[in-house]
Image 1 (cartoon, rainbow, N blue to C red):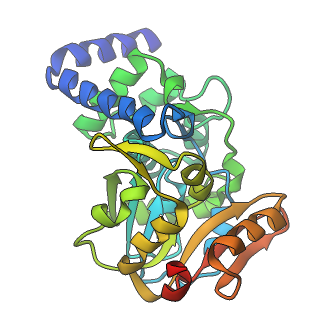
Image 2 (tube, rainbow, N blue to C red; image 1 turned 135 degrees about the vertical axis):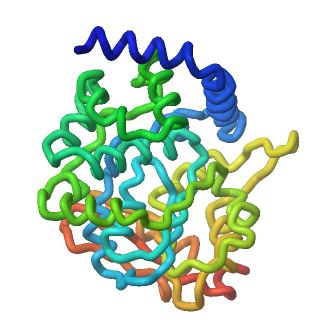
Length: 306
């Protein structure tokens, strides 16, 4: 079976001439990550297979039914959990173009495979995405996504993934009932849109896309503030996290909240960091678990202008 799949993968890569353009386009985008982060691409050029945040815990504090959510990408778990809590539309943005393809693989698995099969497919050890498990989901991928993944398996899948993430942080993959709910939602074709772009240019990317009720930015503040110098259109730019929130603010509804950080066992440090940036009056810690939680901010124009 495994040899047969390898032959099919090689045959597919020969058959679709468009794959060469498609793959080069992807790899060119990946190479640009080094310029964006001034050579520190380790922050951006791989994604987690699962979120290492307890997304379900903090999103359970919000009423997302019928709401629009903006989120960063990586594992795609923020998208999935937002849908699970009733979001009517989710817009996901990531500087790494791979996140879109991984989300397509992940959702195809949830929609078509069993709870046990998906957990094997997304195993977090060094045998991540083993070929025999990939063969189970490959037939459910769209032609474009299938061609991409065929090419990845002919190369080295570890180039694109972090294998140290923890699936039990996201209850979809730790609870059969939640998994069944997620399968039902995904098979109803929810409204999800992906944007490949730098968060430091979020205003440009969200033009004409309406307003959002919630924004999930994970710990991007750590990376943006540590790699604030980057090149855009040949010019050196310097954008700090607070300026990102300024750009995002016009695209939010009046009562919207923004996740500005996430903590595990260093809550006080993270909160103090956020307080220095935004003040304390409109900050809140949202957590239902003693070992992890999110810090949310309700943007206030006067605070952002200081």
